[in-house]
Length: 224
Image (cartoon, rainbow, N blue to C red; front, side, top):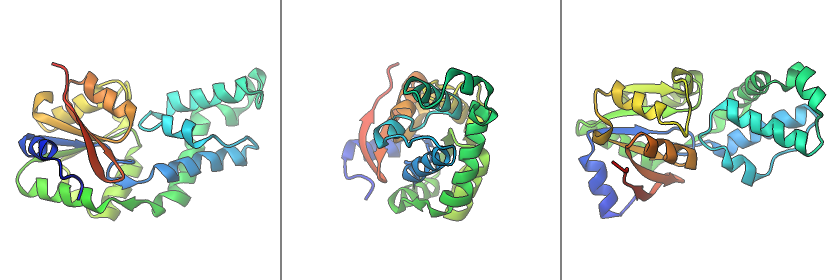
């Protein structure tokens, strides 16, 4: 069961629109993203990142994540400032593309759907609530996950990171998701696993549920 908390259950039932993050919220994929990132670093002859560091990137768009990774590698002496400027493999765009290819080709097919979250989505759609996906991941990954999980028919809209100028923790992606459902932020509820996503929901003035391992664990009402 995704939750037995009566406050959370009542808040879900009261929302006209539900906005779900994808990775770590409806699918168990964060670990596979971590594997893909370290796989990429190994191929480049660079050291792996710790689980703690990788977890801190949850929900963050590619650009700030890979900028931070490059800064860590430079500060630790594993790459030089000159390498960072001149090696085409070490640009933010190149790292993002390489990691995306590794994840999609090797690790994404291993992702597992959280069964209780899938049941929640289907039940909410059946009672007429509108549902959006709002993920920092690219559209190719969102389409694959929704198709292979069988959840595609239950989503009224899909918003991906490349559709907004500013990614999480900025509010853009959740505001666009609410707009795509023809609802106000106050009428919606966000489901998120990461701190960046929860901060984005707060910035959008949308109530949020913190979800981990397919369970809704805490309710964060928006400041209005």
